[in-house]
Image (tube, rainbow over all chains, first blue to last red; front, side, top):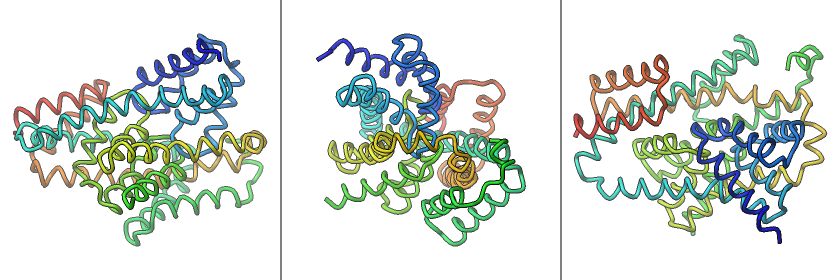
Length: 187
Length: 177
């Protein structure tokens, strides 16, 4: 059993996760630095192939990257090491901090903090909304982007269709619709 | 048992349809956790989201790990985390050959682009809920003040979100308590 390798896997993903703010996608450059530059587990090309692979699948990016790279480098144990180091520390901090807040839920200070955080979370989500809308316009052009936005807004808000159903329909549509040559070139 | 099953479903669905990484799954998680299973209120979800946003590391797993823990303890945390992580990772390892063949296919590449407008709508609806809930708790004036100031700090002065969140907590503790 190569313990040094397992330790390196753990440390490299721990560093990427703990230094990466803004969720999985913003952590990718840090993972690149560890995996390609520091430890040389993958070439630059292999890494970008892996990134392309994770993009073809749904779900959080970083756990897919960590699990796959850990598996390739250190087998099943490597996969577990990478996953645990990416997930566990931050989850424990969350549970600890929120547990602390909840213990003082009745205090007016904590209630004031909750009241002030709600609009700020709204602003953070507004930024995400804007970036998703802007990226949609960039990818699809504003006519199609707007059309898809209006259709999904009507289905979701007016008819209460479950969002997963809308997304599954879109995935099928993307896979089934004939792709003109031109669109492939743009992508 | 019922709670564990509900957690499994609540985090499995966002993990499987959430194209665009962890942030894209936030409104999908909210739909299951707040609207469908009513594990928590919009405000409580906001606290969890704010904290998840302020801490490093992937967002979806922090939310799954914490919400699972609150609903059903350590086992709940493990169930919610597994539902988030396992399906897409297993698919990646199992379908490696197939995925390698199709990863450059324009049809596969455009999935994210087709799904993104819907995610934008879900995110927009969630944004509105937070502003709405803030007006109810803190009133119009405080809401507008906090929105304008945090928007300026984040967009114009490029202050790190963690500091804006921390600042609003201090403001709330002093002026809204």
